[in-house]
Length: 421
Picture 1 (spheres, rainbow, N blue to C red):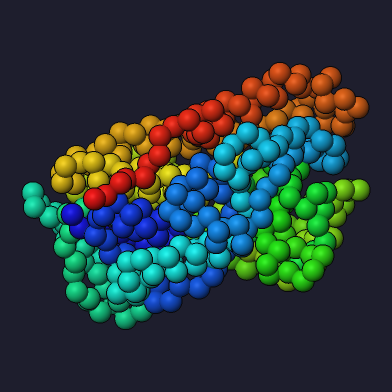
Picture 2: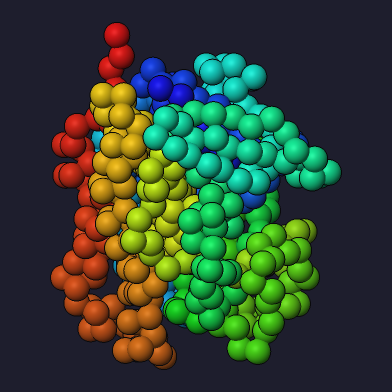
């Protein structure tokens, strides 16, 4: 069996490694002519880390990432609403890692080059069209810079892992249009700074229309006693205009900073971090409507191309990794019937991911911050007087169950690895 993967991001490269591990031939096609370590931080939940470790990437992740110890939510006054252990400390058999997205992509890319060969990754190939019949699917490409046609490629199956603006998704959903706005805008940056709290904690601060997320993502890139810390802040649009097609727009901090200027707390100086950040990027906080099907014959979708979601609960990159592993297993166990394998993958993953997309629109586990704002906007003395602990525990638990990474389920489920002869 041969598979074409469109897109060399986290999902596409993990798909290539998973297919190779399952004994399936694979080629990856990427629009850009050179892959650079772009982006900022990403959190990999234990369900993704398990899959990457089973692909033999555990040492590389441990060398580059930071194993998250704790997730904590705070109100706009810097008062703790809820905290919980993460990774090994939470009972998982695998850690949770915060890592620079570009470094993760290069870990995956280096592994693809080493295992599949550099000739299996085709850069500068932008998907122009595809066609399929009972025997095969053919992908046709153009040079992204010049528009000149490039050689087509035939395979038994094609996987669209080409992101939120997926060309593959657009072929089967031509009237879909731009991503769906949440009515909020996000700004992101990173800087070298001294550790806060225990140096391993991811924190969420604020409420729905004004919030921040902060976590350390690298010590490898930092001098002794410092960390590379990732931050993002979100505001309701409130008259701010943003072109929906802009996803990496460099902006000055003055565009959003005033509401956060006083957010220096005894345990973290967020306002000072923002002030010290040299490069800041703006993104729409958006997703797309869940699809009724990802698979069309010999073609399917994966990762952000299949289920773009709002950045809630650290799920997008994690779920792309899991998608890749389930896809490879489904194809490997299809008896050579690529269409049946793709449909099995669709049937298993799409309902789960559609639910996560919709839960993230309701703020997933981060809803506790809005609850604290609604019930105690002036702050509190004891969080238990505002939100009972049982309620907090159930919110955290139910999201993990829905997203497939509660400890019991993850620790006890069978591996997605396929043993080849």
